[in-house]
Structures are given as structure tokens and as C-alpha cells.
Image 1 (tube, rainbow, N blue to C red):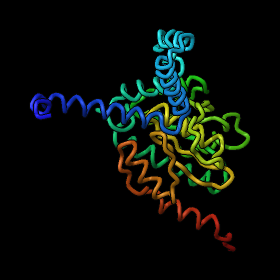
Image 2: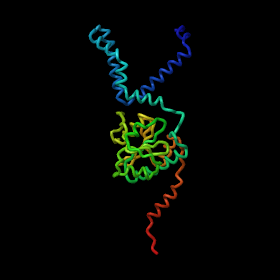
Image 3: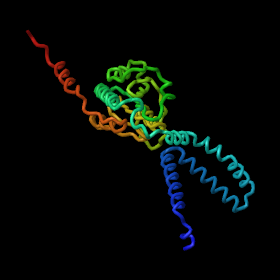
Image 4: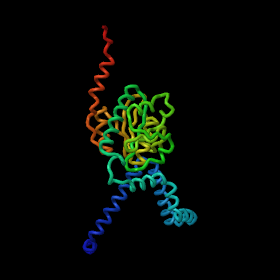
Length: 278
């Protein structure tokens, strides 16, 4: 025992630590997906192979041994979605926080307009789904929709999601300070642990957050509830102030309270006031 401890080097500790981190990240990536059941099935095959070799079951052992001859191809086919997601996460750039191609002022403008749009949509109980691109490119999903290429504005976002708009069923993609596409279709989440009460819009928001590092803001047309999906998790937002703060944290812009809030409130009061009589 003392000889083994004497031969133990700091490189061995580093090697064990790296392997533990890799295994831990793999388990986190597979948690809550169908890959857990597939890993259990592979473990059963390994156990069956050991039992067949122990009991000298030659036919069973031959079948299992031939299966393991092409196990690499089998793993790639079985775990293709998980492997694709893992490689995308590894390739994500962490050196450029926030929305690529946008300054801090532009990101604050995006947050301001998006919060205004969400306020109007929730008041009317209109469903919406807005995806904000960060470091991972979303071109493959944006190409499935209709190209827009317009500056982000609350009025444009509201008009897209109106019930009679031909684009209201899809998602809106924001890249930098511009709306690049609307009416886009997103991959649905494969997470089996999410609540059944979540509709297709929320599952799509969760799905794009699982595949990429994008931030998805969704508004429920049934309840008016606002949620944010990021990194495979969905968060319920209490109010517009919390939405503004959370978006500022996620896309790298600490947006101040909108300056036009006072003017907007005055306009609302004036619109509700009765007409004056001369």
C-alpha cells in the first residue's frame, strides 16, 4: 500500500480529476433524456456478455462479441442528438458575452423593445416566442422561416404575433439588434421530466435552449405567463421588471428602466380621460 502511495504522482491526481469531470458532464448531459434508458440497455448487454462468458454460453457470447465489434457506430447512431449537442456546447465561444454583433447600447435597446412587446402581448393574451441569438449561430433554424431583416421594435414584434398574422405560429429570431426571421419552426424538447401542462410553444423554447445557447422568451396565450428558456431550463418571470433584469444578465446588457415609461403612462392617462367640452 505504501509503495502504491509513493508511486502516486500529481499527474495521476490531475488525470483522475479530469476523468471525473468528463463523466460528470456526460451524466448531466444525458439526465432527463431517452439516453438514460439506452445507457441502461447497453449496461444490460455488457452484463449479459460477462454472464455468457462465465457460463460458457458460446452462441450468446458470439452474438454479443460481434455486436461490440461495431459498437462505435452503434453509439454514434443511438446518441446522435446528444453527441451533436455536446459538440455544439464545446464549440460555443465564451470570449464574446452577449449578443454577437451588437454594442451594449444596442442590446439595451433590444431588451427595452422586447419588454414593451411582452407587456402588450400579455395584456391581450396573445402567445409569442422570441429567440435571441448569443454565441451559437442559429442560421439553420432561421432559414426555415421568413426573412425579415428589420430593426427590433415592439410594434413589429406585436404585429407579427397577432392572431391573424400568417407568421404568428412560429418563432421570431433576433440577431444582434435586428429581427432576422419570423415564422421559424424550432425543435421540440426531448426532456421527459418537463410538466405536461407546458404547450408546444414552451417545449419549442426549451428545445432550442437545449440545442444552442440561445435565450427564448415565450408568452402563453392561455394564461399570459412569461417564461425564459436558457441552457435547457425554463424559468417563470414574475413581472416585467424581473424580465428586464434577467435578460440584461443573459445577453450582457444591464438595461436601465425605460426612459419612455413616464411618457407612455401619460399617454395612457390622456387616452382614458373624457373629451373636454368647450
